[in-house]
Image (cartoon, rainbow, N blue to C red; front, side):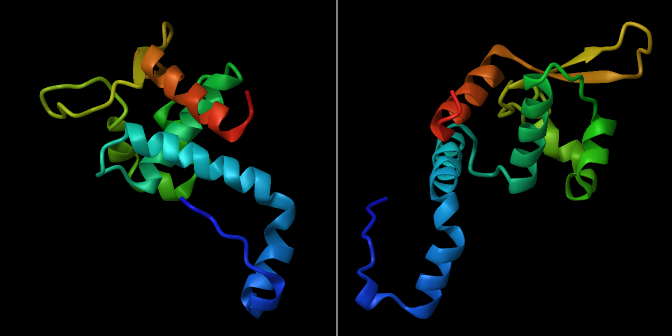
Length: 139
């Protein structure tokens, strides 16, 4: 996206307030924009913000070596909880039910409790997570 810096003499009051309020965060916000661009190239048009947030929660947990389950995701965010089954399925391996699933996350059963399924990034999921982190300037 082509950007044009607004000359101070042309800036509206809102534009001045925005720059004052957000200027200290410009670099991080630019990184956020680049990370969304990286995701946008990889996800289907039907992906929702809640689905992307569910993926981000799985990435964040996996990045620090934390195991995460659907129950954990429900507990992290009430917005995701309402539609969790639809939120994470986009990222599971393709199946007859959803041939367009991305295969970025797989489920591993807990050895001691077969009912528990941990959500773990696949190689493809890790690649997208690294691409996002690089876009944000974190790597």
